[in-house]
Length: 135
Image (tube, rainbow, N blue to C red; front, side, top):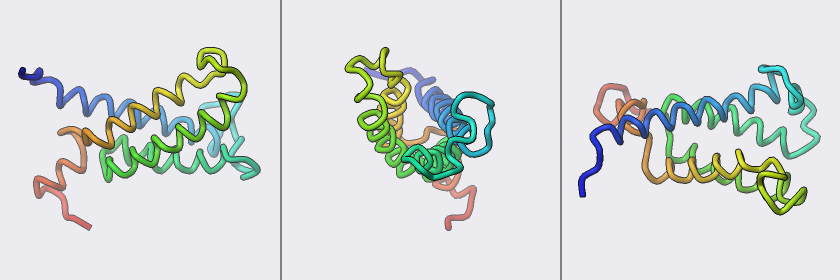
């Protein structure tokens, strides 16, 4: 069975969009952008959310641009698994009630990206094609 020729491109789109939304969670915690209930919550480093915010910024940016995608996505996936079990699950059994749906989706999308790779529209792909210098 052959896949669609668009599948690799949509893999890149999934990675870019997921990375940018993940990055947004981190920027809200540390840069108060966009404004919202969690704005500035990471600045005090008084809870695990602050450390998650650092991972959201670093991994979100790396995933969005497609650089070191596999390890960044793997770390982000694990972070979201921990976030779900420590922050969301104790509130309620059902993800729709404990506000953990995003954490679950991020966890599994990033786990998929850690295995599938970044797709063709990525710095990783450009590096492997010899277009960018390797570190």
